[in-house]
Image (cartoon, rainbow, N blue to C red):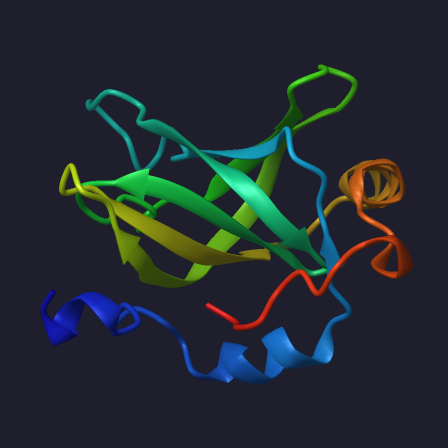
Length: 153
């Protein structure tokens, strides 16, 4: 595997490093995903791409998610939705910014397991309320779990 595979993407804004470390994070139960979307403005005259990734952890300011792909695809998305497999919670059109994307491992089929950091944009009061409810319902109590992250993407 080449060295370039492990480097963070060039569009990562270093000012977000400090943001990442100052927020309390909660691990999220399995079955919660983030669905990335591009606004119609960005996707003018093109199909509106949609991709999904499993949520690893969440803070009041953003999410860390993991996906499998042959190439990076998280760049350029500006909206996301949070959905759960039990369909109890769906939060649509959350403004966001991808702040990091890195390779975790390479699978035997040539795909890469990647992790991306997503910072919430300007949230409405309704989005804040929905996210607070999601954290309450789907976060894992740190006392009841093993150490859930050993590195930051």
